[in-house]
Amino acid sequence: MFDIDQFVAECREAISGREPLAIKEVLERAIRTPTELERALPTTRAELVPLHVSDDLTILKVVWAPRMTFRPHNHLMWAAIGLYGGQEDNTFFRRTGEGIIQSGGRQLQTGDVALLGDDTIHAVSNPRTSFTGAIHVYGGDITKRPGRSEWDEQTGDEVDYDFDRTRRYFETANTGIATG
Image (tube, rainbow, N blue to C red; front, side):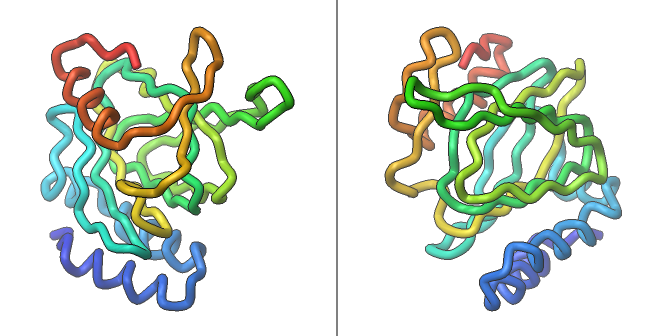
């Protein structure tokens, strides 16, 4: 059975060397048993749930609603994403003098782990008609990181990122009104 406290302890030990690759290895071990993760972290509703938050490490349970999308945003710290159910499509962007432009993408399926650098800008979508479950691990306190941005999909305008607004967006996705 997947044990959240044990997973957090393994992540805390892995970051003692400040090496994101060590976190990736811990996450890869955890998602080898997706059924256990699903039992411990059910994917029955869209949600963004902090499992651990400290100055040097955040671990989130992220569940994407069917067909849910989220606008381009940055983290300003490394991130490791591991899928234990469904699919997460990432579209990557890079900055230009006028804003951001698309610069690639990566599709994650159940069992995949991706490591994102601290300068990554990406948008996320769940193309499926079922929920997608993931564990996201960050190299800092993602809930309070100052200076983060997101970009309006229609105008391309850069705006300040707000973690609480993002949590409300996930909640709204449960009513089928996700537009954000």
